[in-house]
Image (tube, rainbow, N blue to C red; front, side):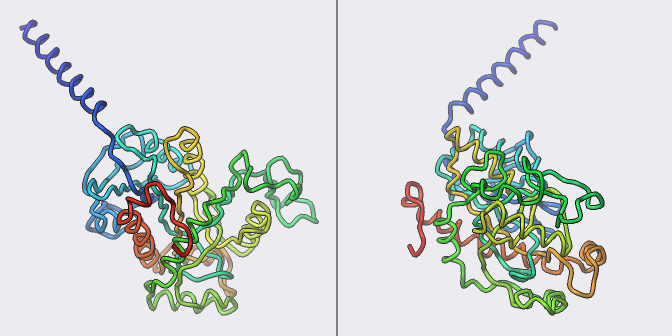
Length: 361
């Protein structure tokens, strides 16, 4: 009996070793485009969609690859070379997920284009809910010093100020967006971003009566009352879901500081600085090309309240009942706009593999 058991164990071990060697010896799948979503609601298919569901269904991401060392398994269309990943919400999960994918030997990502496609808050001074914004700069909103607002000096506008400074926005002359060793700011490939914007600028985005009713409250914000459109702007990435006029003012000042006034705060979200940090390390290792990254954020809500509400009142309304009136439209816009770029990469892979597209091309 013991002999049979031992023989069975040896057979299982041999089969396991054979399968492992076979997997390791097989060529990795060449990936042409990676779609990065941050969350899903419920199931990946067939129910109310989060950021991933439309991509999985419409791009036919049917091949399932387990990823137990990250938030969510990977799905691939092996015919087109499009891969979809859900990082999970927040900086910690996003960084871990992108690094896990980048080091996965099952995939060849060396020429892949990356599209982060997710919802965001939008500054009503710049645009309206439902809009789709291509990102030029990502600024980290977490790396900072902070003094409680009740203890800040009387002449300070905020108690939140840059690392290695001693007051808000000090040492501005030393800021270099192209050399931010702690990851305070990232500059995306402007030519690639402009190319994506030009390809999608005239797309008509979905709108609803509920969105019209919400934007109508922002009577002092002309851009907030417009219909959704494709735009360009800078993104503030921070793990804290902040809201309100005073923090919106801080966001504008913070982005201006770290971009030396070249960037304009338009959207807020959580994960993008983490994604960029992971891609930077992977680029250093020759695993990916970080210059092939595009970030598309679509506006599900405003980052501050209208004039007749406090920040707390407005955030409560957004977080309950009929809140986030533009969320579904924002999710639809992310696919509607982003898929144009993904489809172009796949269709013209013979050229896109070695040559990045440029504006008006």
